[in-house]
Structure formats: structure tokens, C-alpha cells
Image 1 (cartoon, helix red, strand yellow):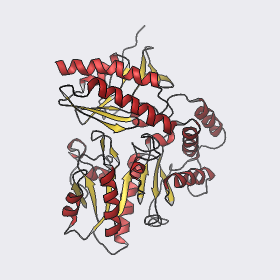
Image 2 (tube, rainbow, N blue to C red):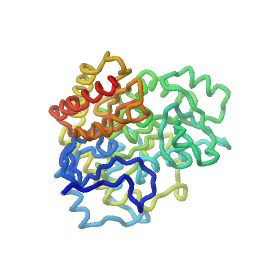
Image 3 (cartoon, one colour):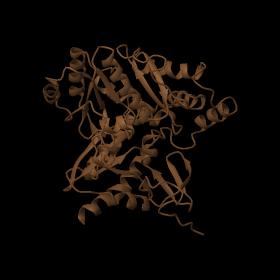
Image 4 (cartoon, rainbow, N blue to C red):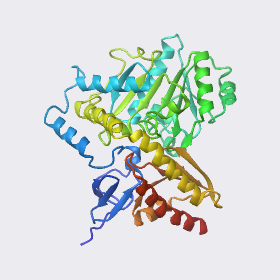
Length: 398
């Protein structure tokens, strides 16, 4: 008997536009709903399920951790915090880490670091440069840093202190800050996710690093979605050969277990002191074990290389099948973070793809976003293309 999926759950706040799908099981890059329908997961929980679903090594580690300790508190030392922090410091070339529970919390902590960094220098009202099309979260500070009217509208006065500039234009940021002596930081996504899979160019990131050094600003790279090996490097900014001063992480770092982190370089490492910030659940042993094991498995199973090579295969196939087609504006991204921009709204593709057995997302109204698990194989990449291309052609023909 087929179960009927309600359009809305009566006891939940109506905060999400949900598809009429209820997923109950996953294995590898595939998931199944309550009716037994199978889907190829091209979204991985919006870039969260790094290792896919039910990864044997991760499940065994988490099961073991559940029998030991799930939570204590940050009143006490937690060895797994130090283990994960040490690994993140090693991979990033930075200095230390603060742990929290989500990307929003990581970004909020980064913004607090920037504010206090300025105040500690005697700047009463520090300002932070942010970007057009940015998405950093839905708290009051991260919402103000975000450039999306749907996110910002209806919540009264926004938090002040943000200067917005266009992407990939170093002259624009120089001009926008020329008469602003209170700027203390630049905050950006190395590849914008919600804004439409928009990469910051290598040359621009290098120019921005030099500008931040010259001005004494913190360079803050939001790697919540594009980090943790998704692009084929540990962190997307590493393609430009730079090191930021502050780096928020979350999503894929715990392979499904909620986790957030802020990694800081020397300039920012000692800004926060006891009493300045904290988190009850941040850095709990279960989340830390998930992070430690995720990074270990990525390395052991060669998933950096896999993300780069299978991602390149997927992008090349999309370009071959859709590139140059009237109505396809661009195909962009890096590794297994890809976007296909059409010249029209294409939200209808979400339901059509699901009907065809493919989970994906449309963001910025016109950009098909693909964020499959990093374990995606070559045959599964071909399957994504085989399912998606006819749907795109059909919507362009309407």
C-alpha cells in the first residue's frame, strides 16, 4: 500500500517548502522513501552526507562512541576536540579551532571575531565587507551579511556594519572602502552556494589576500558548503594557494552529524577569550568522533581525488550535453559542487527530477545545484547526466 505524504506536517512550523517525499533509508549514494521508491542522491542533504549513507566505517565508529560518551560539557577537556582541531590545523595551515553545531553558528562566531578584532584596536563601530549574492545564515548578524531579500525581509532593522561589494572585482572593493577607516574584515564564500554556485576567481582571491594584508583586515573564508574536500581540495580557497585568517566550516565535516567549526590563523587565533563566546553542545564527543572519522575516511579512501576526477567527469558531460544549448547560460563550479544556470526559473525541475529518481536542488531560482556525496562513482555521475539532461531539454522547450 502506498503511503500518502502530506504536503505539511500539522505539528511543525511551516518554515520549509517541502517536497512530498519522506526518506527513510540510505545506502551509498542512494536513498529510499516510505513507499520504497529509490533515488540517486545528487544533493547529499545540501552537501552534508560527505560519505554518502550508511558508510560502514563511519557507522561502526559512531556506534562505538555511543557506548562511551555522547556529551559532557565544555567545562572539561575533551580529547576528541583536540584530535579534530589538530587535524584541521594541519590541513589548513592555520592556528586553532572553536567548535559549534552548524554553519550559521560558525559564521556568527566568525562575525563576532571580526567585531572584537576591531574593537580591540579601538574601533568603536567595526565594519565588515560582504558580497552580492552571499548567503551566510539566518541569525540576525549572518542574515545582515546575506544578500537575499527573502531571507532578510520581515525582521525589522538589520544589524549594521556591513559593506556590500560585487564578486571578483578588486577595484570595486578598493573603491567601496576608500573612505571607510573602520573596515576590519572581508567575509566571503570561496564558492557561493545558495547564491547560485558562484566561485571567487583564483586571481581575485590572491588580490584579496594581498589587500587584507596591506590594510590589516581579517580575511574570512566561509567554507561551510564548499569545504571539507567537496571541490577536490580540503578547502576551496586552497585552489588559489592562499590561507585565510578565519574559516567557518560545517555541513560535510560530520557526514550527517551536526557540527560546526571556526578555524583561525595567527591574526585571529587569540581574539576570543574565556567568556567571549561558547556553546553547550559545540564540540560534543559524538560530533567530534564524526569529524575525526570523516577526515580519516576521506584520506584513506582517496575521496579528494575522487571528488576532483568524478566532478570533472560530471562537469564535462554536462557541458557536452547542455553547453551551448539555447537557454543554458553557464555550467560552473569545482569538484562535486556544480551549478547549471538557465535563462529562466526552473524550480519545477526539483519535482520532475525526483519523479525520475534523482534528488537535486534549484537555487537562486535559475541554477540547478548538484552536491552529491564524495563517494560518487563514474557510473553514478553518468546516471545523473542521463536523468537530468532530458529534463533540462524539456523545460527549455516549454
